[in-house]
Image (cartoon, rainbow, N blue to C red; front, side, top):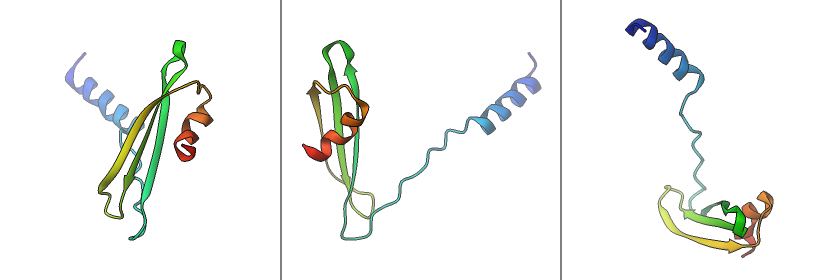
Length: 85
């Protein structure tokens, strides 16, 4: 494979598979933004990892926590568990 061909493939690859991820917006000043996330860790143990991050209007990290939770297997439950805990 020649260099021109390899560069051409990479140029097209980067066009179609951009790694730019969407940026989230900051909350208004005086408010906090909470991000919840979770995912299955051990399927055979029905264990799920849950995490929450709080940021201010400047995007500064204020607080966060994570926890291993047993018995949650549904993705909707995984995403909403931190809001109810």
